[in-house]
Structures are given as C-alpha cells and as structure tokens.
Amino acid sequence: MTSDNNRTEELRKIKEEVLNLKKSPLYKERVKNKVFPVIGEGDHYAKIMFIGEAPGKNEAMTGRPFCGASGKVLDKLLASIKLDRKDVYITNIVKDRPPNNRDPLPEEIEFYAPFLDRQISIIKPEVIATLGRFSMQYIMERLGLADKLKSISQLHGQSFEADTDYGKVQIVPLYHPATALYGQDISVLKKDFKILKKVIA
Ligand code: URA
View (spheres, rainbow, N blue to C red):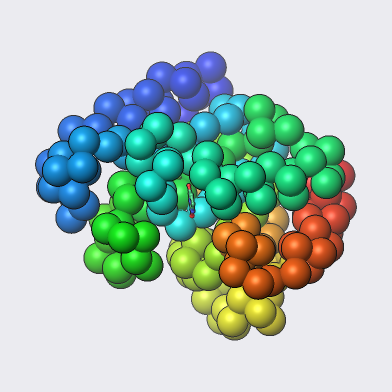
C-alpha cells in the first residue's frame, strides 16, 4: 500500500514507465505520429476519479486527458454540479491513442489496465465514475461486480458499492461525454451527474 505523502512520486513512476513502454501494442503508433501517452491529471487526493477509454487526437498531441471536443462536454457536465477539474482526477484505461480513434482492443485494455489499477490504489478515490462502456466493464469486473454488469443504457447513473485494497468505493457508470456529440441528449448526462453529486456528498 502506498504511503500517503508519496502519491506524487508513485504517480510519477507510472508516467516514467508508460513513457518507456516499448512493449506496448500502441507504442509504434506513438512514435510514428510523434505524440504522447496520456497518464492522467488532477488532484492526487481527489475523492472522485473519472475513467475514460483512451486518448483521442488532441489528448495524444498534448498528453492531457479529455482536452478535445469530448473534454468540453465533460467540463460542462462538471460545471453543472459545481465541480472543478482541479478537484477531481481524470484518466483513461488505455494510455496511448488507438489509430483513427477506433475502440480499444481487449489486448490493449489488458496491457494498460495494471497502470490504472495502480493509479486507483495510489489515489484511493471514494467514488469512481466510469465514462463509457469500456471503463464500466473493466472496473466492474475488476472490483467484483461482474454479476451486476448489464449494458450501459441499463446501468448509467446508478451506484454500486465495491471493495478495494484500501476500503469501500462507489462505482457510478456514466455515458461517455462524446455521446452528447453524437446525438445523445445532454440533459440525460446532466441528470446522471446530479446523481453522481449526491453519491459524492
Ligand atoms: N475520450 C476518452 O475516453 N478519453 C480521453 O481522454 C479523450 C476522449
């Protein structure tokens, strides 16, 4: 278990390891496109951690999570419940951009997931909000909730308690912010964020 005052150092180690991950299935793409992995950003003591899928083009160019079009939607959703990015921690399962923004492959999720597991153990969030079906499935299976898994349209906005190596955590599956860019009514996402706010309170 990570000692509390060591969080920044432990997270820095993860960054270092991912930067040098030549074995990664997406490493060649990273080098070819002269882009960066995206490790995560925010408060190392955050009560709430948001977990997306994988970096998109803007994220890979800057090394920052959710800084493109879906990031703007996420910012709006955070603002709707008076949360600031600096008070939460935002990351993804897959740390490098899949080519052409395709869905992450199972072997890519498997490869990067141990880094996410370590980020969770270091930050010890009380609430994990998954953004989209990939992080929902990974986190629910990882934290012993495989029997509760259903489609995201059935689970979004609900809260599930799970056990971790540092204590209890609430898992809140949310739609991916990008769905609002592809026709999903943003009021559905805002309603789920209101529920999230109640879970955090
Ligand atoms: N979509 C994601 O899942 N993560 C990002 O960081 C950006 C877009």
